Image 1: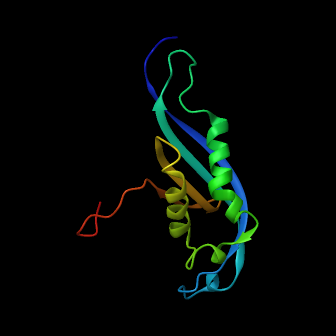
Image 2: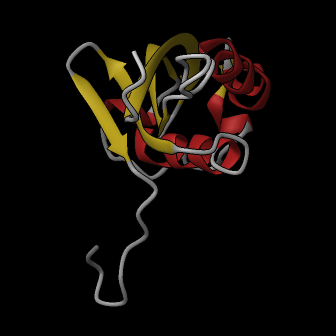
Length: 129
């Protein structure tokens, strides 16, 4: 098949980490842990010769080397002052975006039904996108 197209890859990761939210008034103020799920989405053109856009193995290597090695089975407060899911996923983005062309979206799940989605979009001057 020789159709020219862009595709979006999705690669899933799991890691375990502890954290506490020092500015939160509630149970998460205390140290606790999560079994996190991270979804990384990257967009790129399909190479007509190889039929690939971005190598899954390359994405896995980049995430392992530049994100997970510093946080898996670790205390997130050693990496970030206020490791909310929002701050953690933005920290991840900042580490991957220069290395992964086409990075489109990251989803970080603290639980099966609670996630933060980040697309690298800064807020405008008035506080909106």
